[in-house]
Amino acid sequence: MTDLIDQNLLRRGIRFNTIVLAITMGLFAGLGLFLLTHLSLLITGENAGRYMNLLGVFFPGYSATPGGAWFGLIWGFVVGAISGGFVYYTYARTIGARAANLIIRAQGSGRLVEQPVLRMSGHALGLALGCVMAIQLVGATAWLVIRGTADQSPHAALLVHYLPGYRVDLSGGLIGALDIFVFTYGLALLLAWIYNWIVSLRFRE
Amino acid sequence: MIENYHGADSNAADVSAEANALLLRVMFARVDVVAMAPAMGAVFAVGLFLATAILLLKGAPPGVPIGGNLSALRTFLPGYEISWSGVVVGSLYGFVIGSIAGFLLSALWNFMHVIFIGLAVLRGNWLD
Image (tube, rainbow over all chains, first blue to last red; front, side, top):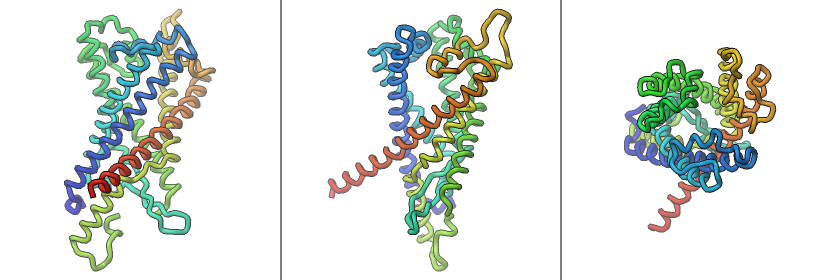
């Protein structure tokens, strides 16, 4: 079927949705971090920074304060947008023209109203999300090493509880990246399976 | 789906046009918010379940509290603790939080599509 699809149209469609998901994730992450910072301040007061200030290591200017929350909004948007764009691009390039098989034409009340509903490819989603999580872990670990604070990062070192073999150095970061890729891939498969199952129950062609 | 999409007398050009039309529908297809919410909820629930259970199974040296950092979540999640009952409580919280996140994310995706398509139509009308 791939030779039936206009490849230029496919590329433009991928670019369009890459931008859409980038902005969507940017808004979600930026606003999420902004609101979480204020929620933390509301609930814990002066102790808000006990863990959240650790984000300031990766996001210069961020702190668990009303002013620092604005930096969180900006950094969250930037990181969310880059991640979202990467995820969609990787997902779309993985499924390619097979995307045409990933919709359901949902019928409306008694009339043939075409409301295409998306289904998901668990494999493509796992690949995309796994890669972005792995890259972020490697990047974060590398940043700690470059800063020279790898030895003073006990919270990062605790990740070894969930990521066997992880250490706060470059080789340990790569091992952790592999672990987190596998873990994220599995969760993405679960997400797509449940989503597709509910969609198939709700919309029957 | 392509094979069911065209009539008996269609030629390759018609089939290609229909394939491209189908591709456009895929590009602008909406995410089902009702499906995404529980799906994300389940993922978050499993995540928090595993995060807590792994620490309990691994244990800690004598005199060291288990999950001293993860237990800080109880500030936001009343009733959560690093225990087997806390595993259940955490999973429930994870499901609720994940469902809200899934709902918002998919609603925002669908809304952004509407905005972008609207802007494209306006731009097309403006240029005309």
